[in-house]
Length: 619
Image 1: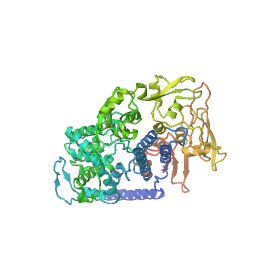
Image 2 (image 1 turned 60 degrees about the horizontal axis):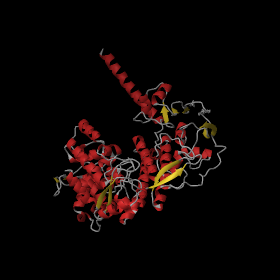
Image 3 (image 1 turned 90 degrees about the horizontal axis):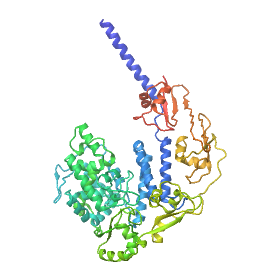
Image 4 (image 1 turned 180 degrees about the horizontal axis):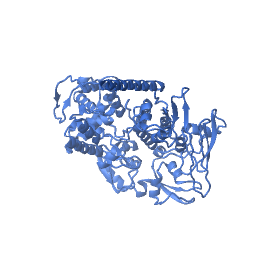
């Protein structure tokens, strides 16, 4: 009996060793997973680049839209892509490119010097400083500076952050931020005091935005306090095409104070409250419960930007409390922001206001960053307008003398044959929904010969800046390609609702390839019934096109054969993911498990994209 047990044990041991060797052999036959070969990522980068190109060159294309709209779409695509590719180096490069481009745009718009690095990118860099950090404290105590409520804890992360802000590029950025404290400190701290929040939270706005009311992050956070739309609305900050109250320093500061107080009430700790402001508070609470931790410093698995967030705040408070001790001796504080307020009860052009009080349109825009257009919102019954200090009485007097028809400019546009609401909206840089609302249109149907009323700036120079004039030239086009090496031509008939982006994803090709194959140049405009040439690889790709007929419903019958390539030894198969496929579909086709496919390809999730190549070891 003992002999049988020993023999059985020996057999089990040999079986385990054999299995381990087999696994090792399998791993050696597999090529390492290469995230660089990612068609989905390539297409997303192409789309983001197209939005960025239109934002940076608004006058070069016929179908130009508002600059801010294109930046917003670029930021939205980055946010969407971050779910799956946030750690990819290509994503980081594009994130930097879009953010720096938007910073430059704000610089030109505000006629002020730009930060050499935006606040949200600094948080990403600082997060990388703390990898493998043991949090060794140089100062074994926390202290609370005079007149402050939040204790300052000194440890290795705070020290590293202080060094970052007192050397090189970090010092240049902090120097500029320090100068801006003069402009906003009294205004912000007075509001914090009214809301019974610690006044040192003022420096949270410094690391959020560098005190820039027009700041916008790739994650669509807006304003000095970087509110996303949902959180802003929860605290009374509204936004639409005409205005965005997240940019209003007064309203946004009050909302931030209330939000931070709510977070403190929830966590009972200012460091956790501040971390919850930057990150999702529910996820902070989840980590506290799951990992049984009590302090911010013990929270595991935080995003890069949150790892550097609290240390940045503590470093900012420390340096700003005694700037001379940290080498900041030659900065000049900006003049404090002061203004009077007036309530207007009708839509009024800022050009008209500026002229009435002896100011400029640029000054009025700077005082009212929440206004996204040239006038106060026409659909608001009242609007609080910020005007230069000491101008309230003259404004009230002059404004009453202005005829109502001159307080805002309107254009009566006569509809020409062939025009649509879309082309008219692009011409005047106004959204279709706004034209419909002001003209009481229930549908997009318009008739030639009728007229539409469209609001535009009264000043011609400003009008040229905010309302793009339709160009007479047409987009540059070339002849479609007649031959593409290694590919065969398939004809695709454009359906109603199609876009070049949709078609590119359907056939696993890029936008630039479709444009090049069909001589489309830079345009994105396609029409139902239009024929497009799609050049697909000759081997292993089949394509069906959509036939459309007038008055008949259109359907897509897409047939795709799996692209597979066997190795010479027959041990592995390379499967190219087709559009619409899931890991479950592929596992069923090869009679393997989803877990095996993920293990063979080093994947942690079930997410796959058209064009991905998966290694398969058939049983």
